[in-house]
Length: 119
Image 1 (cartoon, rainbow, N blue to C red):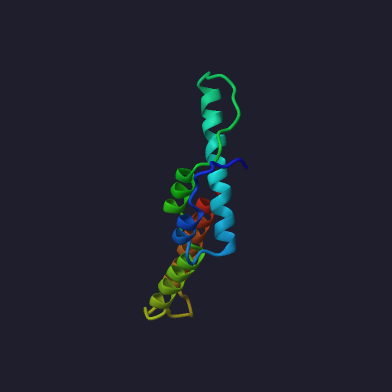
Image 2: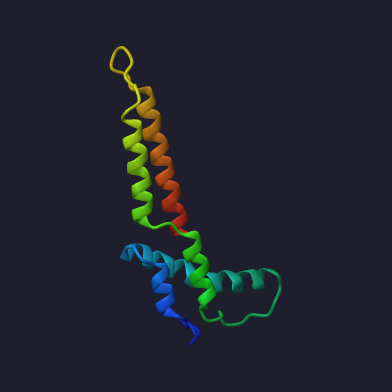
């Protein structure tokens, strides 16, 4: 990717403290798509074809501000699961309706987080 010369990588690194390697890879991938999306929008609006612009500091800051760290999402999941274990959940016959509902909701939330990170 082409990048602008004035990107402050030290500052960006300070914003990414605690991110995993996978998180950083996803952030870079999302940021790299921003100039491409602009180019596609321009083409859709009838503007002349051009090269994608270089990646800017603002692109990276934008994806960092809208992304969650994997550790943070995992911590939230663990916190919710530990809280739910103290609820009375067993019905007669061994049915666990509350726990089952929480498990399904947790799967949905995790899948949404992963989908957001993939965008």
